Image (cartoon, rainbow, N blue to C red):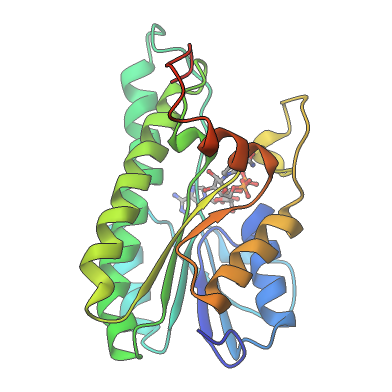
Length: 230
Ligand SMILES: NC(=O)c1ccc[n+]([C@@H]2O[C@H](COP(=O)([O-])OP(=O)(O)OC[C@H]3O[C@@H](n4cnc5c(N)ncnc54)[C@H](OP(=O)(O)O)[C@@H]3O)[C@@H](O)[C@H]2O)c1
């Protein structure tokens, strides 16, 4: 679909990858960009319309869908990555919190905006996943499970929304240089590179984004014998 002239909603757009996505959408000529944020006062950059949107809140999502009937590109970017061992006392709570945001929140937004995308010609729905949709990192098990679930959801949505002409894109990335990965010392891809790969896929109609070398290598290795992380 054409990014120029599009009307986009980006969740979690106050910082990190979401902010860079909104800025790149603007640079590529999107007509309107709704910057979803739990606290819209934290959307501290120009050229977008801040919108109060906590994706775990059914009331927020339904109010947003009622108000933003002109959207034809939805980017489900908001996410959390709580570190916790499965053996920790709080592991059930941490797992539920991760699922509530990364899986149910993503589903809630997709569900509310699918009819709007249909009405506006199909458009595109982008779900921000991870290499950890495919492999498990022990201290991030709750995150990995929630991103695996979001990957399955993305694939199901692709089938369901095909008839209405909606392009559904799953994005896999390794470590991105944002607050989320700030505590991890390892090579990281820039949010600018990931955002550019996402918008290129939207423009060219590609259903999967492997935004960096780790995501390409890990996907290629998935049929290997299971190791400790598979
Ligand atoms: N960074 C990485 O290494 C990495 C790698 C692969 C995939 N990803 C994925 O990329 C996406 C963007 O992450 P990031 O790196 O930009 O992380 P980030 O810098 O931590 O930003 C996360 C964004 O999501 C928002 N958010 C969290 N929970 C929300 C909720 N319930 N409702 C609405 N917004 C919420 C945050 O808002 P607040 O400011 O209110 O907290 C923030 O705007 C996430 O889906 C993440 O899982 C990240």
